[in-house]
Amino acid sequence: MKLAHYAFGDENRNNGTLVILHGLFGQARNWTAIARRLAEKYHVVTADLRNHGRSGWDDVMTYDAMAADIAELIGDIDNGPVHLIGHSMGGKAAMTLALSDQSALVADLVVVDIAPLAYDHDYTGYITAMRAVDFDAISRRTEVEEALASGVSEKGVRQFLAQNVATDKETGKMAWQVNIDAMANHLDDITGWKNADGAHFDRDTLFIAGANSHYVDMEKRDYIKSLFPRASFTSIKNAGHWVHAEKPEAVLLTLSAFLNR
Image (tube, rainbow, N blue to C red):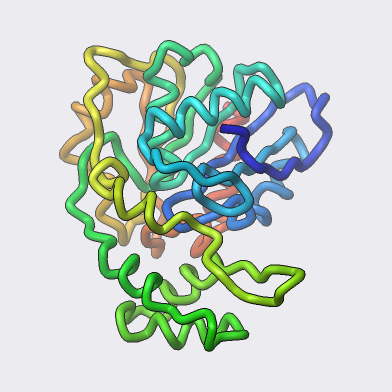
């Protein structure tokens, strides 16, 4: 699938191309502020993964499918290898590509607050709340947030989910920009992880965790390093799962140090 994407900086920069991938219910523009700063040295591309943002919809929502989309994007914009950064679901998609037979497309890898592990997180409540929103009775995004309140208790999460609403320019009607049905049908794939059958990625890899998050289990470091032998680990103080939104300057400094090593 061709992925919608945004480009920042000169594509002929000597430092190469950097591709950034968002997480579940996210979109490319979540990384715009960091992308613009990194574009001072790199050609930066932020992509909407399938069933998100401006990218197309498809019934399949597996990491193999997402990795194939990313490989196609890299071939279109740079032909690789690129610096690849992925947050959460995007991190798993990036790792899947790095562990595939197309790993040569990846110069190095940054995985933000996720690990190559299966998780027991349940997003059914979010999906149920999103499906229940009656867009016939709604005309403002704040009303979407209010409608989500019955099933999503955290205000920040409601605001994050409401960013996925788009307004039709002709009809003025609002609708979800994400493919909720595909996500619902593939929740086990999204929260899961398929072992890579002995594959490993032998290039530099950085795992960035939010210190207040529990997505990167440091007790699993040996397993992670069996897949990514050159992996290093760091955490960002006072940050949770959405590290890049909560501590953008710290993430930027961490990324810059890794990329400039």
